[in-house]
Image 1 (tube, rainbow, N blue to C red):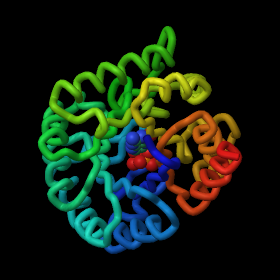
Image 2: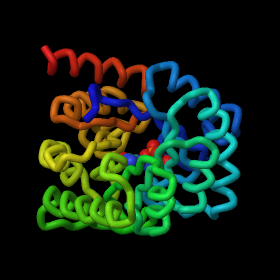
Image 3: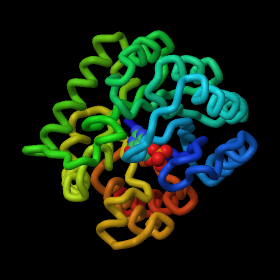
Image 4: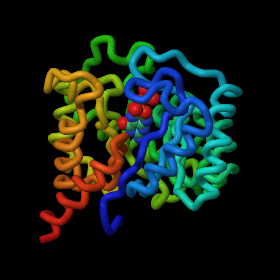
Length: 265
Ligand code: HH2
């Protein structure tokens, strides 16, 4: 399916993202950072204009378009593969027209089902991610009887929806949504059983980067989670994930290549 694990670099053109909020809000710094991530080895640069951190308020469509479209246009024109991190079909459509190749929908078509049609009509790749609830409230006591089985089933249902909308099987990737309506233990369980999801035959994208389950496990703040992220990335490569979504691209490309070398030896 993939000859090697792909690294997706994160660029948040937002004032309020949990780890890089406000750093790339102006277009020049967002473009420069995107190109830097590509130079450091990102296979895909994921550009988003709305934070989905727990408790985040939503952003209106016009503002999200204003934040991301000029950045996507420029970065894609430099030959970088761009994904757009959005839950809105209007933003997804404009991003694809501006040169994005992939739509990364953290709501898995739940917030705006028309995203599936936009992806189908364009032939773009689509990442469907699992989220329980919505960002404003998702971390208020999330409950599962069996987190691995439930997330897997919901992801396969979303994949069925994507296929029914006319999206090609090869264009669909699944993401368990680390930190989206999950406790630390839920996140650790999903990672522990990553092979279960990988076995379903769709590419698997996972975004553990700097997230609070790492902070809670190691008792570290958001600026000090790079080693914890590295451990998760190594585990994901070892257990068969296809794409890792990370902020620290230079470091994680090295972790990915090293772990792959062991795996392939
Ligand atoms: N996590 C975040 C955002 N988008 N997309 C996918 N496919 N998988 C993820 O795990 C994922 C995602 C949250 O991280 P970040 O973009 O750094 O923060 P924020 O939502 O605050 O902008």
